[in-house]
Image (tube, rainbow, N blue to C red; front, side):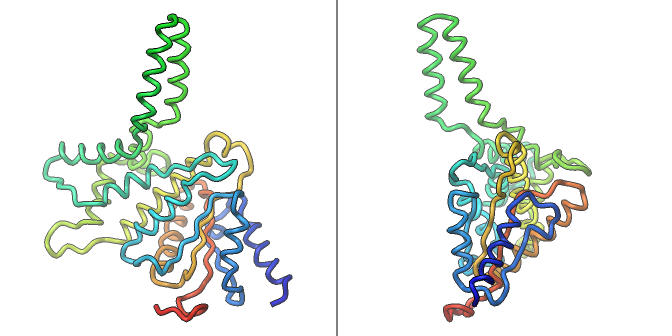
Amino acid sequence: MPSATLEDEFETVKALLGRPAAPAEHDVELSASAPADLLDRIAEALDGRAPHVVIDCRDFNHENLPKLLAAAKARLAMPCPNYPRLWFRRLEVGLVVIERRIDETSQIAYTKAFKEAARKIIARPAASKRSTQGLVALLSQVGPRIALMGAIGVWLFERRFPSLYEFYKWYGHRDRPGPRHVPESRLGELNNWAHPAGEHGIPKRRNRDRQLIEAMLADIRHAYSRGRLAKHDWYRCVILLKHSRTRAGAVFRERLRSELAELERLGVAPPPLLVVADGRTPGTDRGDDE
């Protein structure tokens, strides 16, 4: 293949790394003639430039898409040079909520279970809390003014850690137009979709997956709307899908597109995310089995 064609492929992807203007700019597929290693080369080019993750769709079952989302979240949350760290607390709350069925016969127990899940996700590290408390105690021995300055410094430090309500309330959809809900209501639906009642209950995986994808998109949108990421023209984060035409890859892309279309309908700003798919099925490059 001529080198110019390879450059065209890469430039097409690079041109999409800016802020998206429409849902169609979130999900692109490489041409069938692209070399098998192009996705890896794109990943290498993004090292140190933008948060990104390479997902091999063969590693995931299409019926358990939350595992794919958890893997993507874990890699995107890793430090990237010059970028503030990305947090995925809304998605993490959802992933905790679907771990097991929550008995909703007691409203108090139901509410408590969800709040504990959210609190566990956003809790400040215990070591950090002990250190700041010790610092204030030490400064108080020097003098009240020094102690006050130390307390102000601790308060500024603790602002890095959001309140429970800030992230928990998102499940009431207070960050977008349309009806608002009690957070427990939406989280209850999410838990029931993952773990339906009754011996023969059928999980509503599509609803579950779309809710979790929406949570991930909200986390990304939130991160890029604050601090340094809101002030400059940063590259958006990128998910690179290998063997994207497996069932897991196809299901993820379909549900992502559905959710993006819904957000566009509601007038919500497009999240700064780009998905690049290789358009391959197992067997098209190394002779793998489906």
